[in-house]
Image (cartoon, rainbow over all chains, first blue to last red; front, side, top):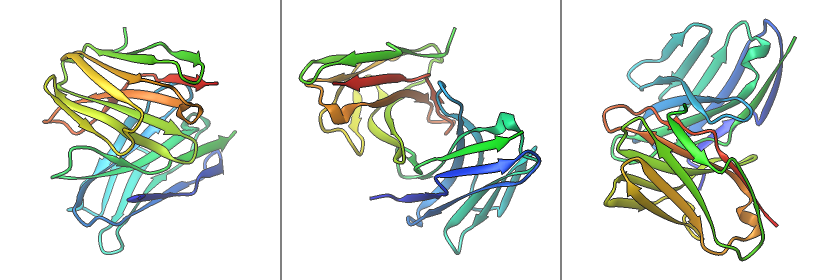
Amino acid sequence: QQQVKQSPQSLIVQKGGISIINCAYENTAFDYFPWYQQFPGKGPALLIAIRPDVSEKKEGRFTISFNKSAKQFSLHIMDSQPGDSATYFCAARSSSARQLTFGSGTQLTVLP
Amino acid sequence: DADVTQTPRNRITKTGKRIMLECSQTKGHDRMYWYRQDPGLGLRLIYYSFDVKDINKGEISDGYSVSRQAQAKFSLSLESAIPNQTALYFCATGTMENEKLFFGSGTQLSVL
């Protein structure tokens, strides 16, 4: 049972473009939504996270947009750079749960 | 030195063999996790431990066992490895106060 659905599976963007990765969830008890970034040969690392009391959170070129009614959240990478090429995972957790549920991942390639 | 260290980094074994993957951390975190990464499936939780005496099954625990030898050490065992256990395995740590997970660099396991 996949509780967090992530799309697309892969994404190719030109340098300077906007990368958008989408996630949808089913469990309305989820109240914490992080994004993790993974470079080849490395473990995932927390990139940015949001709680449902806000609709958007921005950190530098990275923005999370959150739509509670649609049960969707997305990661936007502005002015995408080749160094952003990585695998991105969305995740979700409820306050009563003891672990994160991850999406299936998106492999982003930013062309120079 | 890495805060979360996994050994070995790579391992090739044969069907039916017993294998242990080890994880140690210097972050002083009480929570430790084992995840498995497969292409297109994202990160799936195998086992997690919130302290030495607290061990819990994740969504895909069948065929695996764990041991929390100390606060800083959490090992994952495959009692009788099978080919569909070929995957990239990650150890992660965290705390109750901070929802951020810290991942090791992974162990690539191949079961022939």
